Length: 320
Ligand code: ASP
Image 1 (spheres, rainbow, N blue to C red):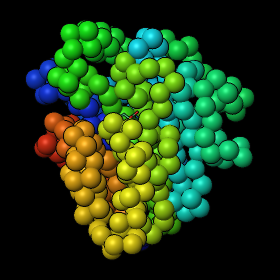
Image 2 (spheres, rainbow, N blue to C red):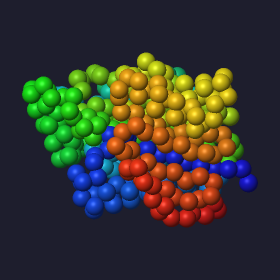
Image 3 (tube, rainbow, N blue to C red):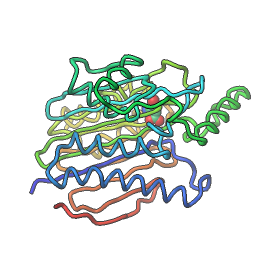
């Protein structure tokens, strides 16, 4: 049977291990595993990669442990603006929303833009209204707020005043979630969703909804979802560059993702990470920060979840 695979990330802005209780880390890992299992259920029953990445991202958007959906970062005006995108590697169709304020699961709105509109990217209030018309769940903006994000915002504002912003940890600043998948028909897909940067100005849009920057998928090559300071990922066309290196320079997934994270993006002195899968079902999730919440299941069905350097084998699943 042809291979299937899923890879996810929960952002490269991970806290130092000692700054969170073991119970919190355990819950973070449990939510990563839940996300992987949701995607695997789709893939193992022969379902499409697009459904798998959407399902995986929805679970992380609904978790307070990641900067997307519930638990998203706060803007400097103390509210939320969310970005998301999805791409189908089979057709190169893609959809995205940016600076949305009321859509409970922005990744599903991105999918609706791809499948039910003539556009690729819809912004702001119009995107909220489009999602509502499409029958997606909408919530008050305050739904997305958690105490942890309030504290991160307060600490960043204080640092800004003291002029110590350069000392802020990656975890204080940002995060994102994403998923990549290969299905049994050889189709690749990628999806990414974020609250962006803590304390960002209203209207700021990062790489997450920009196809080729934060998200890219093309059958036969790879599917990629990125995390890190979006402005640099856009300038470096990071997700597409992974595919281009594989296509034009014959690099492996391992070489291409490592080149981006440890060389190209690191040269800008930013925290960076990504998850990617190739057409053979290899998953890679490199990062250059303290940690990156992540997980993957390759064709062998072994579930791996991780937050810092060491990965944990969580379970063994059936391929159905
Ligand atoms: N890439 C996201 C953005 O710039 C943030 C992150 O991944 O940490 O909005």
